[in-house]
Amino acid sequence: MELQLSTPALLFSAITLLMLAFTNRFLAIASLIRGLHKNYMEASNQEIIVEQIHNLRRRLTLIKNMQLFGVFSFLLCIICMYLLFRGYTMVANWVFVGSMASLLISLGISLIEIQISTKALNLELRDMEDIFEKRSSGLDFIFKKESKKDEE
Image: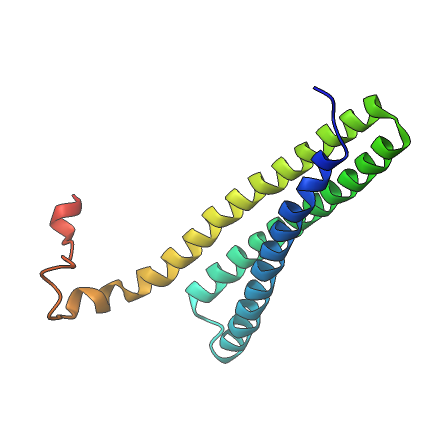
């Protein structure tokens, strides 16, 4: 199969959308960090805030790496298109493979970051479990509350 100029060009929209999603995740985490900083300054002895800060630090590092590999994939895609335009098909094929590998790494890191963000949400939910167990609602017949006995 011969690589055509349109093939790496198709990645442009995908990479751009991924970069937009990664940037939105970064902005959301930046907002969370600012809010946690304010809470930490008011009550620095809360253990959950410290856990969240560690969690957010890991997520920031992962998002930085996701963006790094996404940008690297984008640059390799551009280089691949240039090489194809100039007629260097064999080199362009390898550059395209590098671009795809970089994109794959970026997506893999994204999966890891999603897992960590789920753990962060579970930290928040853990604090609210007591409130949930004590509440009652007219919709309890639909949304059954799981008791501790059922889990064991």
